[in-house]
Image (cartoon, rainbow, N blue to C red; front, top):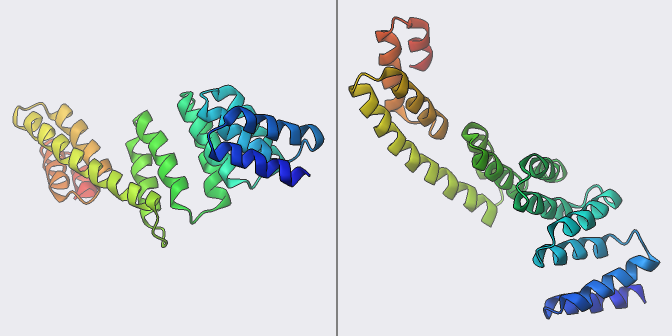
Length: 211
């Protein structure tokens, strides 16, 4: 009977009849409060309806019952991101990585949170981890595209830094060049420019480190 009601709920979802789907899954939970798929589907439905707090509560119940529930943590990460709660989103996506370390999506989604916060060093590191996964996936491709965009931004930032350098605004130039190093560690010219700056300032150890 439980499975029959669950399948009915799934069909309601597929047909866009969300209220009847909610009723079906809630009916199951009245009889079986630890029915993980019902909590998960309720979380998904409430998220679709924009009821983010209710969605989070349903998803938290799902992962409390099954601590290895990958879709639950993925959805939690999305809900926390929508609520602009980056720390909670990070924890959710970190759980995704812990559960399935070879899943590129965990790294890509976590990278996006760090990128929105402006922590480009961590974002690039995570995107690179996503790209390093052996299995091809849309999430791996997404990470590759993100890295390419960051490299393009690095070229623009490098030109800005170069303008500051030519104007004698050395500290501003260093700030821009260091950002380029984060976005594109293989950018040879920025290493040369930083080396020249440090040598000009008499900071030989720093210039050797950069070059």
